[in-house]
Amino acid sequence: MNEVSKYRIYALRAMYLLVVVGLALTMWPDVFTAEKPFATWGSAQTVQTCMLGAFWLLCALGIRYPLQMLPILMWEIIWKTLWLATVPLPLYLNGSFDDKLIPNVIAIGMVVLVYLVMPWSYVYHHYVKKPGTPWVSKIKSEQSTC
Image (cartoon, rainbow, N blue to C red):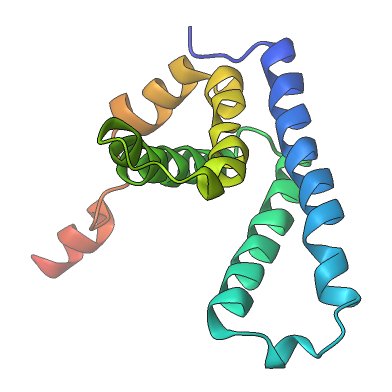
């Protein structure tokens, strides 16, 4: 019941590959061909670039291990959905939406693709329904009572 079809696995791999290629084309050239050294960039920009680099590496790993790397896609869904709900949506609803936000809304709005490929039944069975790892192993608790 909680097995994932091979088509969903391929869709997940395609999603990871899309992220890997997309970031390789948009982020890495800025790092390697920048006119000034990376260490001299603004603090927020270097933090963002390093986080995207880590995300890129984990998505590359996701191509090989699509189900094991689902938490990285879940993180992406959560932060992008939060941003869309808390930044552009309220601005749009109160009539003060700035057109400068449109490129970010489009890029971040692509999270809809992750929603489509996510194996929600698997996520439910493995991250909601399945018991978590015990805080104390049974062997340790028995030893401490002796």
